[in-house]
Image (cartoon, rainbow, N blue to C red; front, side, top):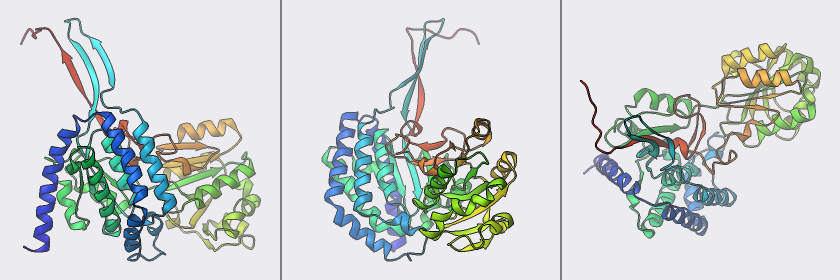
Length: 425
């Protein structure tokens, strides 16, 4: 049997088994689920060296200059944060079984609208082994089984993590088939996206190319977690100290994440203040800037980092690195127009003291998360008090923004009667 045939059998068998395991999870109680997640947190910390050794193997195949390198990298600090997230998700109330609506009809029928698991959720992701933990925790808490389609970049790390998960599930008497790690090669993705008999929902997390491919080729319902093309508009009324701290944090806290700043939109009245606003980014972080003509003139000779003239391609670009663009506008209307033209509808921010500017921005910008006088770095399920996230949706049907427990459920109508029949034709 060839390697391809062997992987085909592995995939076919795994999809059948994960569907059966989902039925078993639907009968699982939340006490057991909490115990599993807390045990996984403990085991992950005990297995730090094993996880990091696998991660180093993955990292050795990727140049450090690749924007995905930081996303791929794990370290003791990140693993400790993952363990804390697992424990936090364990502590959250499960949404499964929540009664969303209840009423009695005139004929005596009692109707209840109740949250239920989706069933089997496939998450397709690139170079983010922490996603493996997040997806498992959120799916288990909502009694969903999961298919994990990671990339070859992170496969060594993902294998170790999934092995730990399987051991913990078995330890607590649950079916380890509830988590299926699919083959990492891209060639298997179309089959996963066609598996309508086994998978209820697909969620892609990664590059625009990956997301577009999943949306265009899936027969399974898809929730898009779009690219983050993120803007911050600094208005003429802005407090400059706030603005400097906010844009520096949004750009440099962690450059490879989808909520990082890509384009600074600056009011033309603040051009003389622009070098001061960007001083830390240039001197301490060496951020490469692509500025329009007005901003370039203001920064030339006063900015310590690399400075270039912007072209059209530098707007509407997700940089995922220490690079950003600067756009000058005459006022709020032009800022709103620019964001409308180039936004991916992920996270957008305004820095202003004028309350009318703030309210217009928050009301008129079409994005999953809009901010006033704070950093877009907060678009994150953990920061929103969700414990973790399965992705950040930029679409409007079913879920939008950071998705956690409630977004991984559907609902069903439960109808209780006492012999009623429907009259008429």
